[in-house]
Length: 240
Ligand SMILES: O=C1O[C@H](COP(=O)(O)O)[C@@H](O)[C@H](O)[C@H]1O
Image (tube, rainbow, N blue to C red; front, top):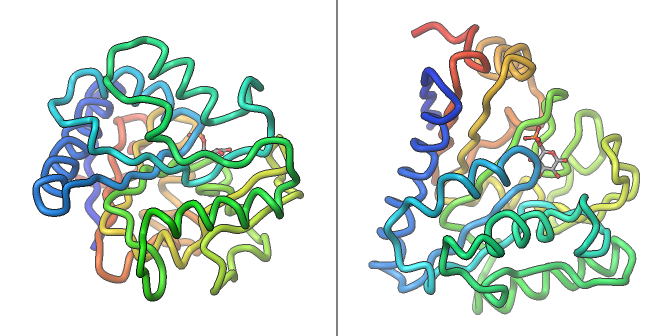
């Protein structure tokens, strides 16, 4: 099931995104006592840094994973964890602490980081039979249609068994990354794309109107839903 919401401004996209997060967090905390959420990098960092301080939730029950991460030191500007630390945690506006972030191992190559990260995830989902079911995955969409570090035409699109895969030839720098794979994305309860800006409009059209088989279009959780929250620039080709 795919829901598409087009709003006037980027600020409204951020508000809607955070409203959806708040509702899912509080529902999952009430039922399971924990909220397992995946963050992506890129433009989402500033969206969450702006919006999350305004939501009402018990942040102490959140467990935060990375939908993908760049294999770089945490203090490198390309580190997604480093960006959240700097822009979200260091602001002191949300009561999350570093221990709630499930991060990749430092100082190792992508293949070792991927194995280690998958083991860390497994420890958070004890007894998982098949793949972990995340409550919510916040995804980005690059102008080429990639999501996580799953790029158009890359063999990783066909990964069927690993939850987390290394990639060392990412066409977008930096080349070395780890990423959730489609088996994980497509078992989440909810995947949310929040996208703003006219530079994304053509790709939004190709994915949501033309239904081209690009990576972001392959996010189709078997028992969950996908929500696209767009501003009017990104959603200019979407008919009301
Ligand atoms: O490289 C990446 O790009 C995507 C999209 O980023 P955006 O800035 O175009 O929103 C992001 O979702 C992913 O986490 C990141 O590693």
